[in-house]
Image 1 (cartoon, rainbow, N blue to C red):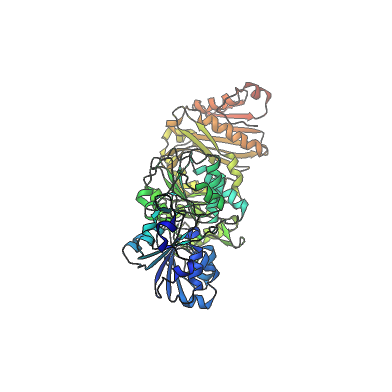
Image 2 (image 1 turned 90 degrees about the vertical axis):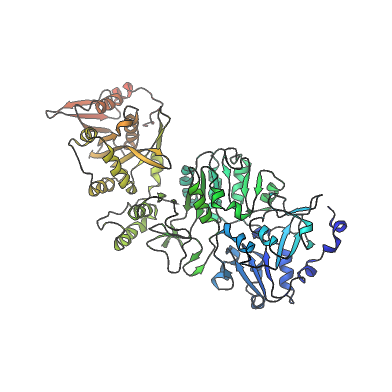
Length: 636
């Protein structure tokens, strides 16, 4: 459409357009990278424009003026989210922060709880039917524009056209300013690459093929994304698209084919990134931009099966309370979309949420996992909403767990130098028992190499991994679920009580080298249940005693044999050359497992019904006697 021919009376220069703004007006500005920079500059530079209240979600251009006292005497900025550019101004009290869930901001405009007089937006040139596109800034911009009596639009050929809710006809715009300029770019600088890579390894384990992802604001979630490049058929339903998604789009990792709700489409509300990203989504039907009160509505989010929300935090306390928008009394970012998506993911079938954060801040001087939130810190996500927390030291599953278990889970993934302190602080608050042993100070990243999986004929998969302090309660439940005969075969007497002291000593004795315990787990809905435990412990310099027990319903399916091979592999790495075991003679199934793997083991039968078995790893007879089994881990 030729605007000069269709509506010449609406075409103004930016200088003349902003003179339409009356003093005292409440002005809405389009979000983030879609903000109309030229209109903002012209409004600020026109000294006749006075006493303006500005509402915006993510602000960039105003940062060029915020340190000018004359500017702050004329403009009052009210922001729903504090961007990096405006952070220092927030520290100094030069802006007003409005805490609000993103899904609820449009309703503030629609109900006139926040009244608007003017909307300054940026659009693409109109098509032949007269429709412009809000492009990369649809979120709350549609509501802001709809509820403002005066709408002024900067028409920029560089604004991509996006499919969805962002189309606006020139008849619904009061004045048009044709001005081409580069869009605002947002390319966060990578920080702590090693930490990001370690966190990404853990998140990679949690994201299954075919999952639908939401990824929140911040550099950490953005830089986690490229590490998911080995996944297949991911879907996207998220508030913001960033450059972190680009490799997944270009490599075909994101296909949206497995989405059950709005399949084959990336559902989003705004975009913040590079020109390369903007060009990629220009007129691309894969992208479906909807308004914030749709994209962020927990009930809409929940329609996506297996939706995984990934966001970050500034700090988390030992009970699971999360702060995202302030450092103490200083406002730092915003509530944004985190709560909306955490609650939506919880209602999603097989969905869950992940909070990812480095374990420390200020160059390692302070822990981000703390006994209590900093004085003045705001609780954005409550302890009742939190689900999974990930740091570079591991995964903590908090949902459905008591304070005692939460303390142990979080202390376990804290930086090693802060773990003992966190346990002591938890004792002072009576969160845990006074005799609680703190987690190991080791960096246990190496334990990732000890994880393994066994597919059963039933279709279930057993996950094997080393025992951790946070497994204490699950281990208790496992032992109590065993039949009396199974307990007798394992402990040689009819043990009735599996006390906290006993279980605590079990994991405390595991140093992951001389002593090791492996657990086998089966997925039960959203959570995993222990169905097998195997251990070895040092007997002599190069000999370790081995023992394991498998829950009755899973016996005879090769789990014990697999666990034995896995324990041998780890024992070999730690310079052991043989296993020894003591088994009751009537426990024929266990004796068979040992004889099958070590056919030439030395067996000595005692007078009290016990069988002592000595199993050298490198015995030529044993090596020759083994049959290669594709379902066994390689011991070499």
